[in-house]
Length: 327
Image (cartoon, rainbow, N blue to C red; front, side):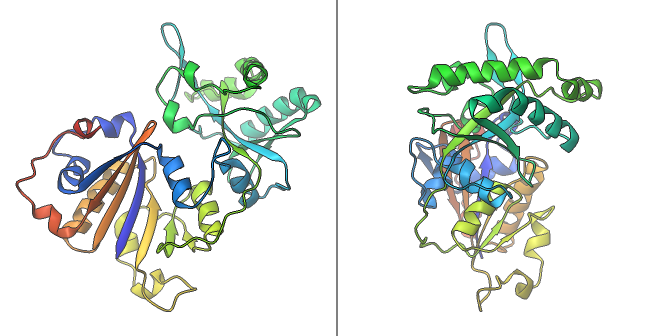
């Protein structure tokens, strides 16, 4: 079975030493540098067009139980901005996990303030936050994975309406600053939701039928679930560990719409337990449970594509280097 795996290189992963599983995979595989952030790369592979954003929000909202119609949507991820010496940076945890009661309280406050301006904040069944606008804004946004850990100044909305939307974000931050839900979060050691991150703006896209060999998606993200639906590909929840998937009987992994064993699956690595998953991937190659592994590793505004086959693991002349050496 061929396996495609998508992963964001957080600061923890990018600093891994040469003996780590990820570094070994990089050293043995064929590595290509791509000039696209990970989410943009995935959108391109699924024939989504940027206008100027990839319309991620609308397609996710449609699957997330919201009435999309033909209006303009943005993802409005709850985030934590970190005060640095002379700027704010975006915490890597995007979106923050927010208790449903706290999320509803914050969104209610935002709607009370902004509804008169034609802005509506909504929460999908998945817990994701969205912003619906009556008029399509003339802005281009940045994906949160591109801005994570950096000075946010250069990643703020740009375009003809940028000043209006910067003002909206400032008002959002003021509303959230002393919100009772944030006081409750901080009292138990959780990060305050002190802003939102806008991205993926657009209306519901018309996606042409896709020609690809992916016949099963494994992901918990509403983004991947929406892609799977648009491509008419079955989607299952991500298991706790790779072995749970690989060791299942072939029949249980066989997509319902196919009459043949699973050939090519795609999965999104979780934010938690990522190191264990990378260990599993290396072990699966060594035992030939995967006939080919394609790694997409997102690193801010760029990505690495790594192609590895079991035979590559035994190329002893390729010395291991730290992960950062490949970036």
